[in-house]
Structure formats: C-alpha cells, structure tokens
Length: 219
Image (cartoon, rainbow, N blue to C red; front, top):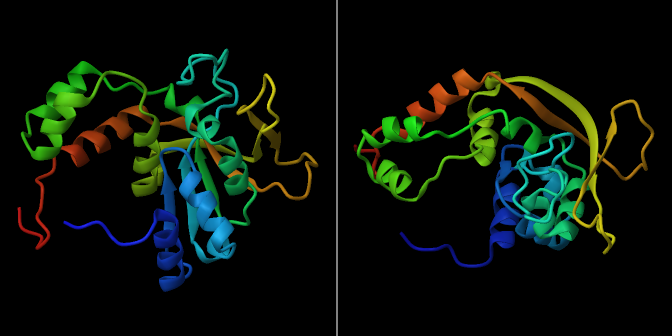
C-alpha cells in the first residue's frame, strides 16, 4: 500500500469534487486538515453530503482529555486547534452531526469487551489487544452511528461554536439552542446526547471481530 501524493486537504478537495453530494466527511481528531481544505476551496462544505465529527462538550463534568479542563467543554479534539474548529463549525455544510463528550461518557470499553474481541485473533484484534485500554468510547460512537444511526436515541439541534480568545476559556465549546437568535454566521448541528449502549456494544464487537479481507475481497 502506498500513500497518495499530495496533502490530506488536497485529497479532501479532490474527493468532494469528484463525487459531489455523495461524500460524508468524518473526523475523529483535531480539525486542522478540514480547515485547510475549506480555506483552499470554500465549496468543500456545499459539495459534501454531510460532515460528521467527534468533538466538543456541553453539560458533562468528565470525559475531557485536556488535564487542565475543569469540565468537558474544553474537549481535546476541538481545543487542540480551536481556530480550525471554528472554521469548520461555521462552514455552510448541508448537514453537520456532532458526537460530543456528553454521549461518550455514557459508554465504556471494558476489559471484558476486549477479551471477547481478542478471541477473533485477526490483525485488527491483535492490535486492539496490544494497545487499547479501558475507557470512554468517543470516536467509536461517531463511527458506529454513521453505520447504524438507530443506536442514537436522542439528539438536539444546536448552534455550535468555540472560544478562540486567548484567555482562560480558550478552546471551550459554546452553544445555543435551536430557538435562540445567535449570530447569523453560526450553523445548526445535530448533536447526539443519548445512546442505546447495549446495541452499540453489540455492533462494535461484531464489526471488530469480522474476518479481515484483502484488497481482492478474500478472507
């Protein structure tokens, strides 16, 4: 397998222009590459079908990775490059879906789940067995909900933004309700809050233990 030439931002632009209205963009980390893509080609947002990301925190009092956070509103993915986060949140996406800390802390990757998955003995499960630790399932929810939206049992429409003033609140999530009147440059997002955890766990274990296929589709 060879790396594609060019940068991640250039690849994003290439794909949404090649498949307009079909590409769902997904982010499980800081949003730097997406912000760069939007700066290079602002039409990325309107060409994509949807933008899905794990990030931000609203009401939770735990779950943030930043050790200096007093609550989960300074969530790592958004805080790490807050300026990039603002660019992405304010872009005119057709649809934006956010998996915040609030829903992530309602799940837990346990030692028992790890043991069950490891029995499959595939390259993926071997990697998971070696490197994974018990903890909240942040990015896993964002990915699983894209595959099976029915695992999400509650969400809200909210206007989302982030503080980029270089003070004590830098990197904190800012949000307004759907019926509020925030500044006109803010965008509504589908923010996930509740999950059918048992259904999610079953889906995750099933996906992680499936046989690995090669590039020709053979097991």
